[in-house]
Length: 411
Image 1 (cartoon, one colour):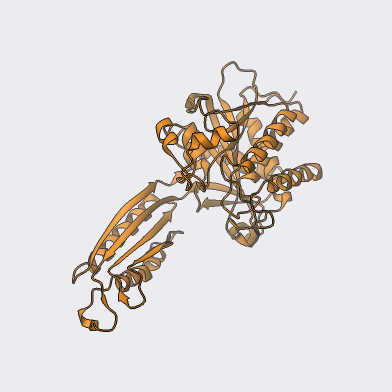
Image 2 (cartoon, rainbow, N blue to C red):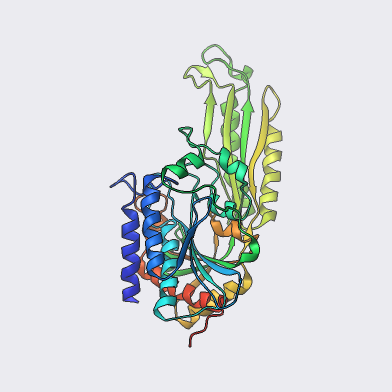
């Protein structure tokens, strides 16, 4: 275990050096110079562990250990290796490193699988450069078409293909993957929340990934002079927006069962200190592990919107995104729990409040996911930290589960 822990730390520390913001966290945008550096390191390690390495037309990386069954579907294991600007060293890379070390244990223990094992390192999960997020998994599964991929540009107007070519990648390689070639997908991720640390439990077995919906709400009123318009003659868009926003948290609290609701962006027009705002545009992010809770809160939100419409105020709500809650595969969940018990590693059943590549794959194959604790629940910041001992424990569990799923021969 100590040797495994040391290798994990070496991987994490090395990958953390590939950042555009040294000393200020990990900034590794997709198809950047830092992407190229991390990519080369991951590919070198895959080869070192005896894996056949290839990339697809999105730049996702695969390291394959062949199985004895001809043309059999693979058990995929891994995560993403991009980051948000000024993020941490663990969100994504911890899962890639775990995949590498599972393959390393197959090699070290001379394990021959019946079904192939593939370590996978995915691009643009965060959406920090080209937007949308989960690009690697959406591409593999065909949710992101070739045409839509080609049309994406970053804030500087550089297209995906231009950026790929600049770091020596080939966008003409095959993109979509036949689901029949995938038997299962396993992902380790840091929790990004405080639950496991507070409970002093090293492993979270993910039961479901929350569904989420995002709205853009526009409140329109009437601009006017801040000094000369009487209070009873105003149609103040910001006052109405503020009253609504203040009530949204209660809708989530009343619904319960971990339902959360957030207003994260707010734009006020004309945004003058002495002008009554005539227009406010704000976002609402609503998440729950059960679809019925999302539907209930959406209905209450619409009732609230209707109650504030009129008297010179017009309100519209546009749904920008909707992803259903995703339940992980029950058989794999049981494998993960059984492995935890065998190694006497405490675990806790948990739901994921954040989206992950696992939620995309869950519509196409059997998926299992485990969390490890995040110090102080922090993520997407330079202070993000997880204990390599916990990652090592997770690797042991994933190795045991991967052996079952690949029907490995341990003779």
